View 1 (tube, rainbow, N blue to C red):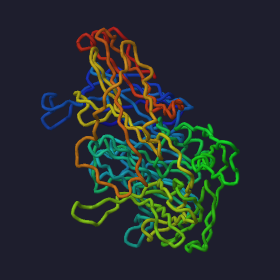
View 2: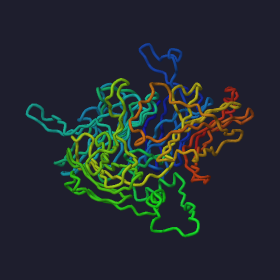
View 3: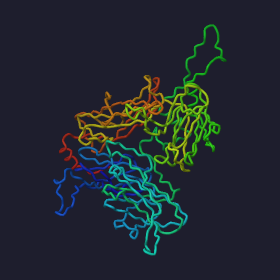
View 4: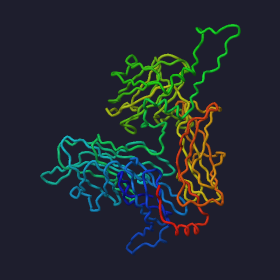
Amino acid sequence: MWLFPLGGQRGTALEVEIRGKGLQSAYAVVAEEEGIRTKFRAVEEIVEESEEGPRKPEDKKEPEYRVRVGVEIDGAARPGNHWLRVVTPRGISDRVQFRVNADRVIRESADPHDQPDRAQAIDYPVVVNGQIDTPAEMDFYQVEVAGGQEFLFEVTRSQESAANVFRSQISIHARRGSWFDPDRVVRLAFSDKDRGERVIADRDPRQRTGTRVSLRHRFAEAGRYFVEVGSLGGQAKPEFIYQLRVALPDQPSHETPGLRDWSERSFVRKLTGDRLKQLWSRGVRDDRPALEIKPEGGQEDESSKEPDPAQLDLKLSDPTIALGVHSEREPGDRLEDAVEIPVPSIVEGVVQHPGDSDLFKFKVRAGQKLAFEVETPQATRPDFNPLLQIIDSRGRDQFSSLRRTEKYRRVTSVHLVSVDAKVIGTFEKGGDYYLRVRDVTLRKGDPGFRYRVLVRPQIPHVGDIHLETRTRDFEDGRVDPHRVNLLAGKAAKLTLILEQEEGFFLPSNQIAVSVEGLPAGVEALAGASSYRLPGGPRPPVIKGAGHHLPEVQYVSVVLHSREDAAPTHLPAWITVTARPIVGGRLGPKLTVKKIPLAILDPDPARKLSQLASRPAGGKK
């Protein structure tokens, strides 16, 4: 259900409390990545106090448990989100979020600090582990600053608190006495706006990814100021867990993404000079020339030979090409002012003010297929929503990154689904075309609205690959937990959702799937896929889906355990991989996901007796 404290600093050790249901007889806690070691301490049932005394366990529908575990963080551990799981005789629990920080980490004071006069003094840079568990609670922290200094304040909520609708807010206060009240405190700045990429699985709120609330403020005068952290509407729950980070803007947090290192359609993925190489690493590049047949009785006339368009696109998508970077030129809202660029290349600029737009001119031939990818390295959604429009020399729209759908069956109007970070298209006619970049609303602009757009030939490759372990077992319900609890003698199914980008989806192309690291007694078998997205209405029909959406395939893998397979004490970590196959040639191995697998004894009593003779553990 939740964990506290939310995280710790690299190179330190701390004790963590994990709360949840179904954790009776828990005996270990494991981490998904290297760099975190755990030592199981104890598990106990939580008995709530009331006016009549302690509430009996039978008074609750489902008891809750507290697991105490020691956590040691290596000095070289990756800063960012990590995940812990509890191991019980019934299997592996779903994951709970744990953060590794590069800055110094402290806990909020146990003494009341709900008023400026009682604010907890902190230094910077620092990360504070806090909790909002009392209705209308406000946590105040005191910081000393120099005049003219600018600070960055960030409140990061846990995934579990985001699932329970924790809407955090942050305020900056200063003491400004008045004739009526010499200790009067006034608010200087406030923010409750979410930042970052939000990922929400509607049918499983526990799979939400918590975003952060950020606030930058420059202090005109030196002195003592107060930082207030609260919850929207004064709501509070024990699982409203947060981290407050106070630092100078030029002090990075050094956070890096986790095990999943590929994101095809995210505005925050990096578009660097080796982007073509990255894309070809997820496909198979065939440089072999086509067979040439010379006419009978003579030699071919080289002057009349037409270049092969496919070979031209292959040459332009060569991963060794150095991508040039071209900047916008102001004013750039007229076709004649457009910056001319080659293909492929990277363009960059800023939407500095409302209504600002930038134009770039490029040349294509008839039938050429191009892809346009956009990155927003600073401000991103929901603040900055960059719109890519491709227009011809007469100013007529050809296609754009706006994804639309029919609103109702019997109504011809359309409504906006999203603004995508990638759009692809085929040009029926050759000639000059233009790329326009602006904010989707025309009402927003800011010096932080920076963008980078990669213009390149389409490269057939394997895009995002999603793995689901959805089953009908007792611990899953509507949850997609990315874990496998396998009873000896039974089978479980893995489903891979394969997105095939930019023409990779052909009858002659294949994707091979394999599972590595299976424990003894477990085998992987090919399965007939009958997976469908769970419940809900049918997805809307997208207008011009070929400009936005990849082709999707579903592949199933069945994991079968022999009846005599030995139950696992700690889970085995299996790795699911995929490899593209083009023209019979095998491409590089792509790691899809690493998940834990436990073989369970059908007799829980026997499992408990075995645990009694083993030391508790959980090192990963």
